[in-house]
Image 1 (cartoon, rainbow, N blue to C red):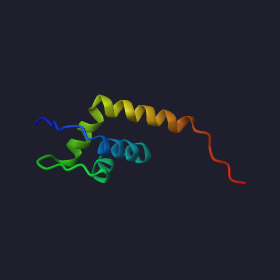
Image 2: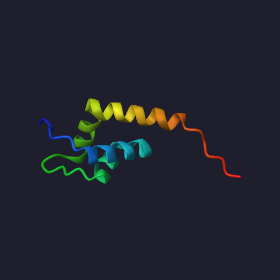
Image 3: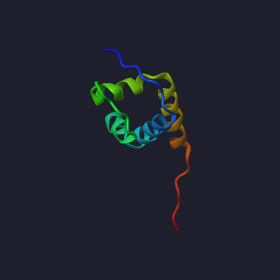
Image 4: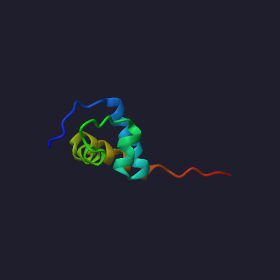
Length: 74
């Protein structure tokens, strides 16, 4: 079964943000609100990770997260 549905910028962005925070694609898929009618949530999560635009956004977000200076509380 091939998964194919139209990209949704809002849920895609939410998926990327949650994935960067948690590292859990299944959790990010569910929390971002992807409706997975007819598909298992794990399959949708894997599909999202395989999408080139999502992979690029994750890579950019992780790089940005690594370069941020830690907040110093005095």
